[in-house]
Length: 345
Image (cartoon, rainbow, N blue to C red; front, side):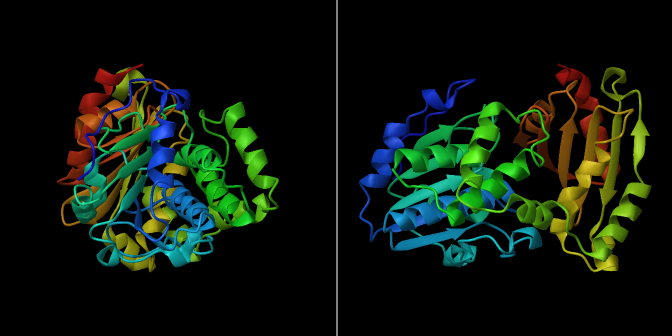
């Protein structure tokens, strides 16, 4: 069984976290023990990059039984298919059922683990690495830094405390994670600390230009056509959020099928939506199943969208969050609209 979970204090920083407990939990493991690395369903660059980069670091420490996984379909999004460490990945069904150590990346709540949540009580020790302020503190040891721009920031610091030096493979994974969650270093969380970390990673010899082209500037022609169709149905509500405005659109499974695209291509669609001048809040509603929608929320600063998301069963950050909605796209967007004024900043 895992030890009792303790949530991080509000506004915790990396200096406040229990690094020593995490280091001890890892160093006390038998290198031949079963170590399970897990990130959230539909993994993005930060989830995959942090998990694989840390897994490669554990390999440097001579851990021999490493498995990395995520719930849901066993499909790595195209932008990340060249990441080092992909050989660590196994389908969720092949994950250790009773791991000696379970390390969880970029997961704010147990619900994001899907069926893998049953490993939590079976693991002898659990460590959560995350940067979501909405994290529920469900791990045995919680390294949750809401001030960090990405989970990879926490992962790099823990690797440093474990005396694992950066090499090009670890650095590439962590750089992809960092670049993804900072929007290629243009979001508000892009601090001097972020650029200092990027400099350390680049100094190993990775090629940031090639990495950026792979994850930001390459998509199939069908995806471009799909984007045009979905953006064409966008709607603007200038009265929403106390007059700060909201823009929204939606994409269906039929849209994906018609253009021959996989769901991951929609992850980048929130970026052009959020550029609308007249709207502070942007909403992208992506069909996940019959009457089920994955909802991405963004704010330019007037609304705390993490509050909106949490109130609807999700989570995230002040300016970027998400949740799972039910009903029609209109139902989902109306639920968001109703809550915006409650979370004005």
